[in-house]
Length: 169
Image (tube, rainbow, N blue to C red; front, side):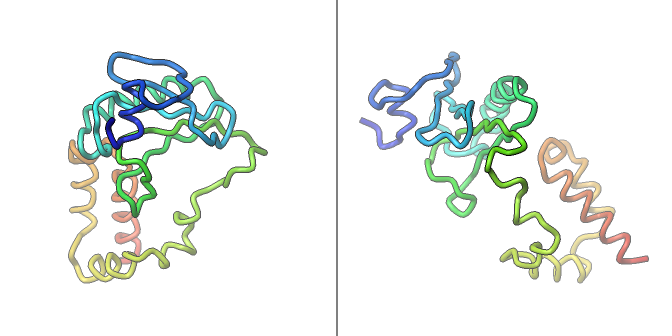
């Protein structure tokens, strides 16, 4: 038996409540769902995280997003690495339907402006940016580069570019 719980579920060696299946992936209800409809989308290939195979991750996100579109509000979540809260070393995407009074946090606390300075890398990034390591033009180029423009980093880089331009005025 494999040590990966999701591979064991895929192979029928561990129990799970299957929601649907596809030749490339399957969807199960998590052991402790955070909301009604909370579902995990998991590739059948053992892929550790989205960065290991962007092609598989993209296909999996497409399937998860199609399911999520059945809900008026939802979160699509995945993690890569222990520091990012990944607890199972096999790519999986949480689809968590949301509602106004679902009891789940309404925001991402680490993204609040008043908390940004508390991030362990915030001071180093700020010093690098302020010492000319990256210009607004370079940030915009990186944000629109084909390999980056499809990711969340696009918004981050564009925001940084705007912030730097404002600071230089």
